[in-house]
Image (cartoon, rainbow, N blue to C red; front, side, top):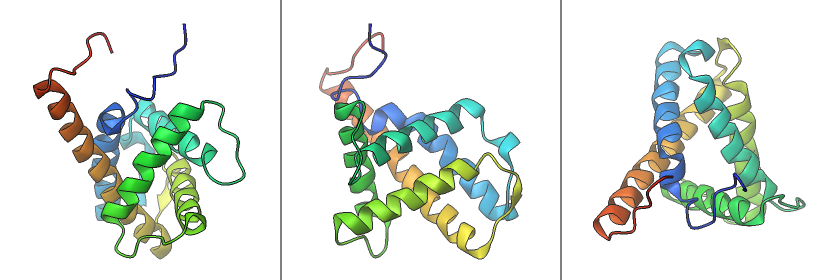
Length: 154
């Protein structure tokens, strides 16, 4: 049995919990000015790294191992960037570069250390990014519930 969720399941609600916890963690590191990996649950960090691995697999020049999940997550990321970035990318090349930057920043969340000015800006962008995914996930879950589309056992 495949452990890969179907494309219909991979919406913002799939990542909502991890996104919400990450947004709160990022808010905390912005307050203190340093990454504190002990405050980010390991499972949450692994989840958001997986999210970005799937996203990056759908960028130009890559061949996704799980096409439907990669494309679904790329769509989530692209739509979220459009909602939260002040001057969103205008081309796929610019979008892919931004998503790669975000992916690299997510990898470093497990490292202790003081944030540079550039890392602080990226952390704030990511805070808004993950807060939006969490919000979109809550909205999707609510819509599925009230429409009777909720799925049991997932």
